[in-house]
Amino acid sequence: MRIGLLTGGGDCPGLNAVIRAVTRVAEREHGIEVYGFLDGWAGVLEKRYMTLDVQGLRGILPRGGTILGTSRSNPSLYEGGLEMAVDNLDTLGCDGLIVIGGDGTLACATRVGELGASVIGVPKTIDNDVAGTEQTFGFNTAVQIATDLIDRLHTTAESHDRVMVVEVMGRHVGHVATHAGIAGGAAFTLIPEHPFDIDDVCRRLQRRHELGRYASIVVVAEGARPLPGTLDVPGGAVDQWGHKILGGMGALVGSAITERTGFESRVTVLGHVQRGGTPTAFDRVLCTRFGVAAIDAVVAGDWGTMVALQSDSIVRIPLSQVVGIEKAVSAELFQGVAARFFA
Image 1 (cartoon, rainbow, N blue to C red):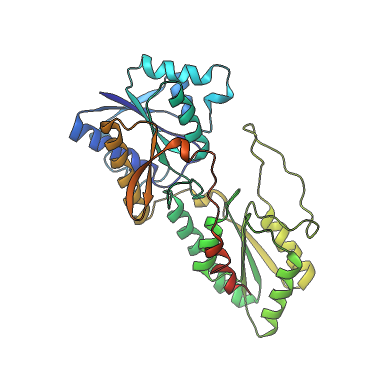
Image 2: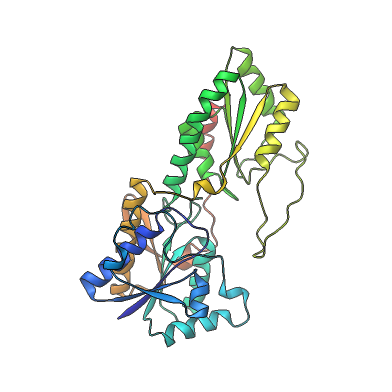
């Protein structure tokens, strides 16, 4: 038996750990040959791959990024692209394909599956927005990186009595911002799910600083949205895939705080730092569990499913039930916990 494997979308801590787990169990327990497609779906369309084996993958468990490379290439954006992907898998003798990615990558896997390919999904994204799983791998690492930075900013903020604004990733959802804000003791956390009133933020920061020499940390998800009419936000351009190019919300919030309160503000944008580096122990374990579960699904012939974490168990759920559904931050966590510590 031969299977393919690809990593699609943005890079993410833990991808190599999944590749390692899939290959080890496939080779050692089942004698399955594994083709690793290069640069995501582009590798499938162009028939670019490398043969994976246990010996060649030694030492990759703690490495960030992906040894296979990744891209946002999507066969559905090209005429006949989906059919070509299915034909190429057949030509290469792949009996199935394990697809590691977020919603866009998994949506493509679903469509390829509908055309006859045998696919298994593994949920990956630091945003933690894939439905059906309690966590995606990479999320824990991103939160830890953001929290470590916030801890460092506290000391310089206290030394200068400043407001420190920290912009983190989170295009449509604020899981990273919410968790990092709670863990880092933020005075405010602004996320896409709950539009904010900048005047209210500033008033509450002023009250906080009137009580004494306090430093304040404001965590801002890149996709955070102000209430209509409360803060002017320039219209954004879109990339080649049709995604709105985000970023800059932290700077807007920082400038508004300075103008409306008189407090000196400094803005730190984490950007791709959140994606890079060594995955946490939690993510290494989760990735290993996902990889093992993906091969188990292959052997069981349970195609068209995604492995997921639910109640500390790894389960399989139909891809059709998770694709296109965005998992938002729960009101219980944001309003019931995070917001109760604001300012």
